[in-house]
Image 1 (cartoon, rainbow, N blue to C red):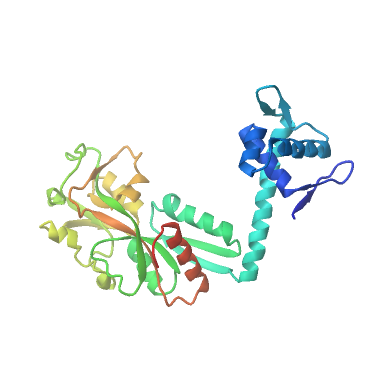
Image 2 (cartoon, rainbow, N blue to C red; image 1 turned 90 degrees about the horizontal axis):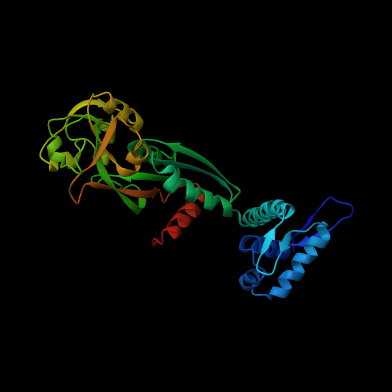
Amino acid sequence: MFYFLLTCKERMTMTTNQLKYFITAAETLSFTEAGKLHYISQTAITQHIQSLEDQLGVKLFTRNKKRVYLTPAGEIFYMEAKALLERSKLAVNKARNAADGVSGSLNIGYVKGQAFSLTGPLIKEFYLHNPSVKFQLFRQAHLDLLMNLEKGKLDFIFNIVYGNTDLTDFSYRRISSDRLYAVLPSGHPYAQLSSIRRYDLREEPFLLTKYYEDPSAKKYGHIIPDKYAESGFIPKINGRSTDAETLMILVSAGIGITILPESIVRAFSNTSDLSFVPLEGEHEHVDIMAIWKDDSVNPVTNVFKNYVLSQYNIAE
């Protein structure tokens, strides 16, 4: 059982359970409710709290006939007790993972817009259970992510995948989908529309990724994007960039328009000189994929992959 020591006039010990009971009582402000949550009696909760107060030499709660309240000392002790239990949990996880051999490093790639909604929360929870793993994160354009995964520079990626993208060399699972938006200058004639067809943009100058006619992207199906051809036109290109923010700057400068997924658009939604109009059509979306290589020489990749799939209830 875990114990912690307090510096005071004499050495005192208290158990993990006592701290848990106190934290629950502090959060519910009810000894009766705390007892129910821990499957012990209200009397037992009261005795544990009194024992803590005796050891600390301070009152943690004030009581009246209807409710209990934390004292100033109780509020401070509540914060410290929570931090202490979290540190003890982390120490246990580190010890267990070291014994199980779950350690190493992961190079994870992602596209803009996925950091806080997807990548960040997954890494946070994975790290909580695998604190011996070190992470390096790389935000890159979607084709850079695929090429660097293929070259072994990345171990795992969260990527936007267009309908014509060839993923033959990879293993992958769909996590979600993103609607596509036309990104226009705020003064554009179409800026106030509630939706628009891709074909309606056929006369517009476009800003696309630098890979639009790049032979290095041929295997991924991006020489002539299918969605434009299916809509009946090949776009006139006024500029290229691998970076979504750069594309936004070019659009706001009136140099052209672009089409981007909702997760990226969301990151720029407060930009006053840009307008975002959703594209019409059931196929006007992209998939958000978790992608990896089964022949990865990094053993942590498989552990992380299994964790990601379990979080989304996706079968192997």
